[in-house]
Image (cartoon, rainbow, N blue to C red; front, side, top):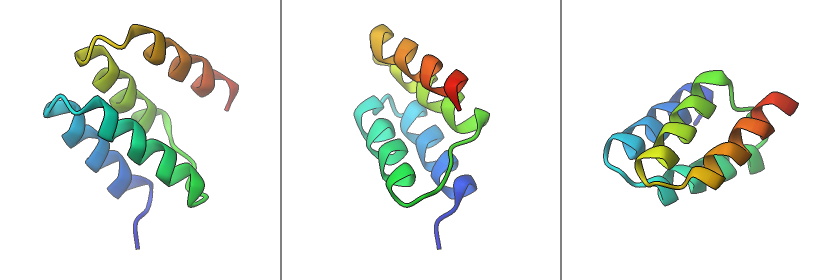
Amino acid sequence: KPNVITYTASISACEKGQQWRTALQLLAEMQRQGIKPDVITYAASISACEKGQQWRTALQLLAEMQRQ
């Protein structure tokens, strides 16, 4: 069963492959499943956005992480 570690690893792989949209889809999916992202998950997601030049989204994720 997927957990925060497997989702984070998948998001990190997306980040390395410059697949920011897929990374964000995984982040949303894990939250729908009731799995709370940790700081490493958010860092990988923000990095994926950075590599895709999605600065606004990266800043939104940073704000979301700070609210958690």
